[in-house]
Length: 221
Ligand code: AP5
Image (cartoon, rainbow, N blue to C red; front, side):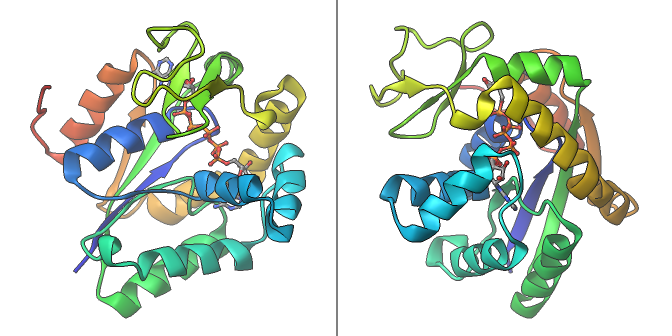
């Protein structure tokens, strides 16, 4: 029976950063719908080209497509014991579809981790973000710099700024979050699996709060 983790929260709050850590600590795959879409964009398929236009405008890709991608991903062998979702679900239709998909598999949501941060902090985090084109590792020019500027510490890949991290697109993404995704808090918050943690402080401090909420003892190294 799979036990899945969901990261909920506005763009730039640190979902991807924390999902990568939790994925490593728990030995579960990190399933980021944003990364899956960016992989389609890089592959240059017709679907990728359509997704690129939607993402660069700060809007959401259609529910049916996203739910199809996730259903396919959950069917893979490495997802049997659960996954760490990052950026999914982000509409009510996606949350309901996930509950149905998990119920059919006898699986469940182990935890919904809602990371919260005021919007000034979000804009600063997104404006300084750099990501590795090769392995997807996440950096920040001020808060999580790579050892060599522009080069990934983990794989030596090139670090770039995401196309949707431009100021006007960031504002649109925040608006879309408020309209489409924030209502999911009401969908999950009465469940015992729901945990709200503040995203303030450095990434390690946020990880410690998440581990405490999940009742997991911190493992160093
Ligand atoms: P997606 O890739 O999911 O982007 P997002 O949700 O907007 O979230 P981000 O990746 O921007 O931020 P994050 O919270 O992961 O922050 P991060 O850890 O990187 O989606 C992109 C687009 O794809 C969407 O707009 C949509 O078009 C489409 N899409 C994706 N999923 C979809 C879905 N389910 N349905 C429909 N459409 C979908 O951190 C940000 C920065 O802050 C980094 O530089 C990091 O180093 C830094 N940082 C992190 N934590 C800290 C800390 N504690 N202190 C200081 N800096 C920190």
